[in-house]
Amino acid sequence: MFSKGIDDLELLLNLTLKEQQKFKKQATHYIVKNNQLYRKPKRSLQKLLHVVQ
Image 1 (tube, rainbow, N blue to C red):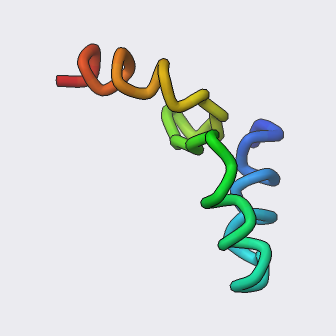
Image 2 (image 1 turned 60 degrees about the vertical axis):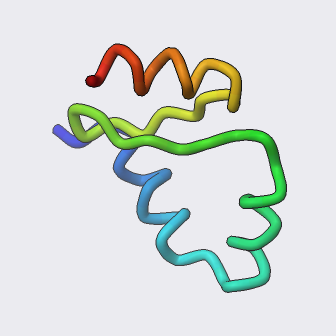
């Protein structure tokens, strides 16, 4: 019933602080939409936010 996105989200939430900082340094952003976890490159994040608004 639940998509793999939920499992990925659980993994992200359970990361250690050091791992979280490592993720933040990468140029990728994670968003949750329709119970799915998406990984978006920074440059498309602006377009995405534009669409959401």
